[in-house]
Image 1: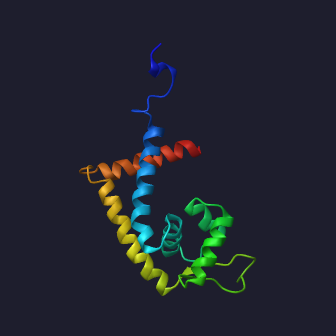
Image 2 (image 1 turned 90 degrees about the vertical axis):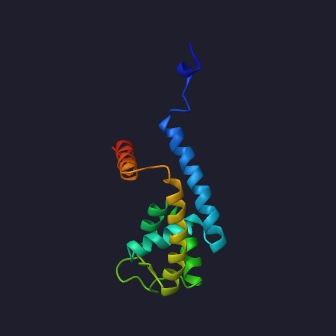
Length: 147
């Protein structure tokens, strides 16, 4: 029995390659965001709010892949620093919709440019339609696991 028959071949394991890519992307994003005083979760939260203003704490937590408690702590810090605003009283129910402030939008613009540069570096070896094909394949992988 060969070693390949006994376990996963790491050179061809899609899961292992995705984990390597994820780790490399995380490290590269951290390297460009840290000098801006941001974590990846901080950036993700601002980006989500720019695209979907009014998200709740729970929705932001799901979108940024963190717990509601972690997002609550982050939102308090972002609000204290003037990057987001939330009403003092929920307009309906208990949900406090969150929105970016002008300062939050300014900080996001700088961070987004840095993250786009990382993504360009990551996909520099892809040509033609390969970036779009890769995105489509990843969406299919996600759908397969969520089915």
